[in-house]
Image (tube, rainbow over all chains, first blue to last red; front, top):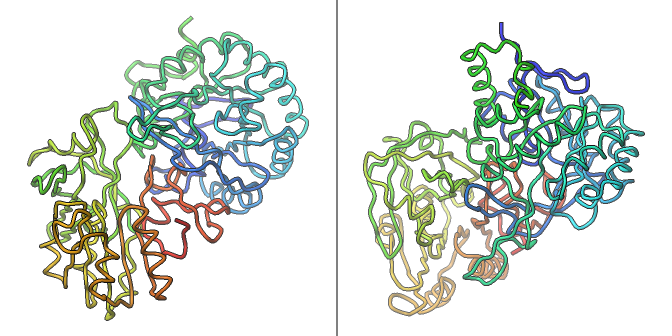
Length: 301
Length: 260
């Protein structure tokens, strides 16, 4: 009997495959392609206290083996989210993880407090979005600010808190430890890497925001390295992501020390990616006679 | 809403029909039977370093044979579209679709409809012309070289405009409309943004209901990533701001629904 279940801060997922925030909406668009019941968890697009319009277009552009995005956290705000998106997700037997964004500590806390009475399983705090001027990454690049916001959010949170870390730092272990010191239950990484592309024919930036967050298979080795480093630096569980497109990619992250993984950009080029990865992990376990995922999580020292 | 599928399609034929303009027929299992005029499909590159699907409009839909015709422009060396242009009969290509909403053909039924296409916005107007049960007049705008223009003749009157004046009216599609004094009860249009902006203004001035098909850089193609938004006059249903998703809420919009 193969056990694909994993536990994050007391929350049991039927398998370690989740969606990466911002690539899967609140699940409805991809429910036309995949059975959400088969996912370990759906991590929603970031939601703020009020609707955010996001950045001007162009917001997306392709790079070699990856892409840049500067959506700017367009979202309907917490009211619509609670009325529409949570009830939608409650129709499925999967865990609901709500990604929370804000411009100030108060913004984050307001959303977290509102979600305390909602039937969601975990919160993921986005302190690492590179595409908004205030909030976002400002909290994710300074260990003191990260620890402080983690502490504040924890005061209002009724559900376990995942702090989502930015890779745009000199030493990821410093940030991982700061989140842990602030009381984070779990950390997730990596968010996107800040990048730039120039359209030489138009002599301007490919994205209206000038810079964007890089994601996709091209970033995977950077992400695996950071997940490995972070997992060795803290005692709390780590959710790994960054360029996962296949089950083999996901297993790399698990072996590097991640307890669960998120599939992001791969959804854009393969709408069935999440389910194929979940099935592929199970097939790998059968082939390699792995009975419990615990046997391979962090198995590379 | 049409059912979306990702399938591996087989190339039936491909020909170059103008400088950098290619016409590709593909065999589908399900996509063609679900498709309506004005929708698009996402094509995926074999080259895995080119991740994102390329959205291409449907030029013709043969539901009986389950085939789609895609007419597209190769945008440069080493691009995804250049890869597509090398596809030979029997080759395969992954395709996701049909995506988006088509033209509201019912709005034109029995009326005088002007179909306006500019450049690579011309192809989706061909199937639209075929399926619109109306008095169809097509006005096609080109930089210089014509393509597909003769194929529109099966479905109505056809006028052309060229920027260099080498054929038809010298100028754009609206120059033709004015020169030929073409009247309409309904307008359907697809083309570059400046053209759509001008058509929207023309339609407002003449109080003609007008639907336009928009284009924007896309990633997912299914409404999840919020990459391809356009500014909308009303608050949108998804994010409750003023951003409609071109891939999911469009690509066809009532012209007064969007800011251009």
